[in-house]
Image 1 (tube, rainbow, N blue to C red):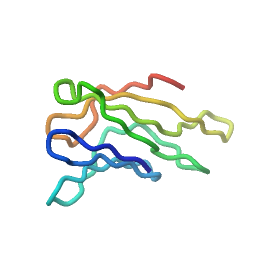
Image 2: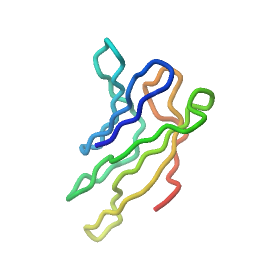
Image 3: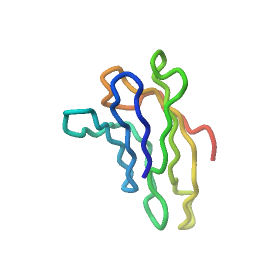
Image 4: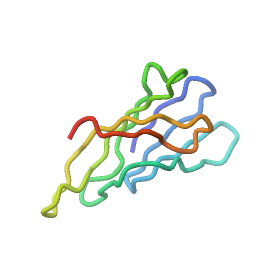
Length: 99
């Protein structure tokens, strides 16, 4: 599990080992952020860490690590980047940048 603070209002993006991404905004119930790639949760897998890009306020770019099924009953860690939608409800234009 990991988290990153969004600079505009102090909301936090939080990952879960179950493969879910959550937005926790002050004074509001947590909401799920959709658009996360398929996450392999076996063994020590899951959606792991998250980091906001230096251009978050303009391009809304974020990075996250996750476990990905590699076949043969094995999973491995991957790193992806995606854009957080303007309403902060989903990831857009995601791509895996390291396997």
